[in-house]
Image (cartoon, rainbow, N blue to C red; front, top):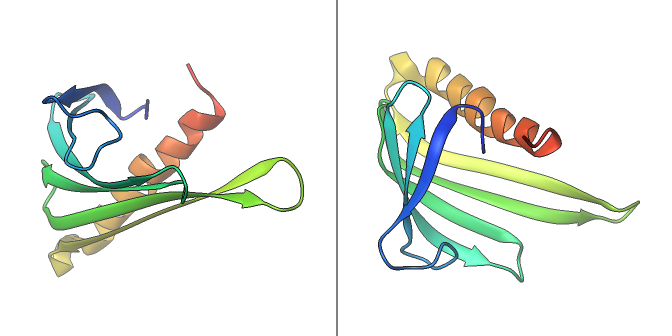
Length: 114
């Protein structure tokens, strides 16, 4: 799990890989983020989710993680992107949080699993 998150819980009756599945992420400071899975594809090695509720000043957050095979060696390229709306005065700060705490934190925890 990403080090910024204390807990991740799937809610409802849908399996974790089915569009519409919701999860609750609890941050280390106790704040809560609720997400909904929009798409999941084993074939395309990707999933897309949206944020329904967040303590951050963002709206319309949609993110996709894709895993692509690297042709030279036994490796994988991970591409994680997001689109969202944020006020101009918070844009630099929030983009930094998403890039560093969320994306890079997630990649780092894959390299060093607990």
